[in-house]
Image (tube, rainbow, N blue to C red; front, side):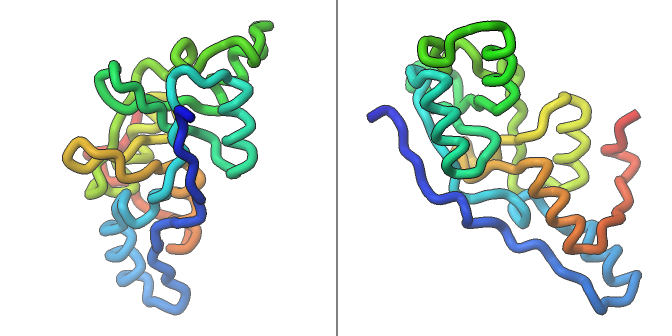
Length: 168
């Protein structure tokens, strides 16, 4: 088969700060990195899969995106639930349409040492909800908006965005 699917429950450990003084919570928040919140185990598919096959895999694993590994491509790609929705909404046949024709074209990669604020700002600027995390050219995880919210909620839900990454 063209795909490798693995369990997704392996998540980064976000820093809980329930009974921590406010200054310490702020300090900890500023040091939460992408590697702390990303999903380490990802769903990987090939460009020849149909949209229906990928939708079934994503649904069964409870993920909103799959990494697409194309040996002829420039790097890992990504297909998201939004890409599938756009195709089906346009009346295309999910049993015929191949992943390669519906990949997100403008892929933005994150580094594990980015702050969650940097990742969130990149998502807002690009209008997407998932980042492929690369370390020395290798895919090491995926960070979703849900992962960021989970981390920020664990940390107290409110966080300052540094001016250098602020959108607007």
